[in-house]
Each structure stands twice: as structure tokens, then as C-alpha cells.
Length: 64
Image 1 (spheres, rainbow, N blue to C red):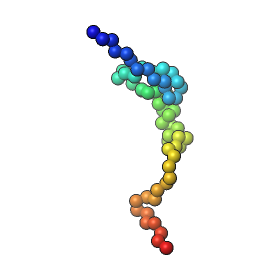
Image 2: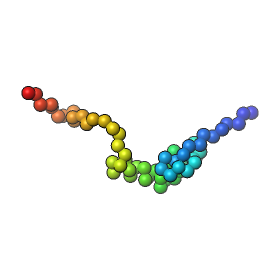
Image 3: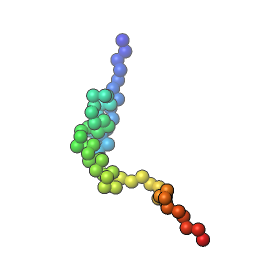
Image 4: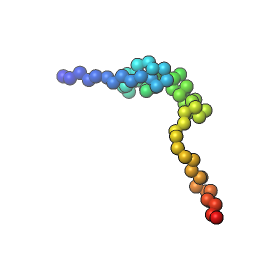
């Protein structure tokens, strides 16, 4: 019989160690609180993904 090792990751919000298993309900976060803080940061645009804005599909570029 082999013993499986459980992967441990740091909560991205507070750094607490979290076991990566199905029972870890909020993984990779340690708690609902840390998960909600992270979601709030995305919603308030504190976190952003770099890139250029592209025109919406219904916008037609001007032709000169």
C-alpha cells in the first residue's frame, strides 16, 4: 500500500496553508472570507489583466 501525499498551497489572499483536496471547500483559499475578498478585488477592478482594448463587435472602425 502506498501513502499519497497531499499537496499544500498557500491561500492567495492571506498565505495560510491549505490542503488541496476535495474536502477543502474554498480551495485555493483558506476560507469564504478570503474568497470573497478576492472576488471583490476583481469586481472593483483592483486586479487587471494587461492588454489593449479592442472595439466592440458592433463598432465599425472609421475609414478615411
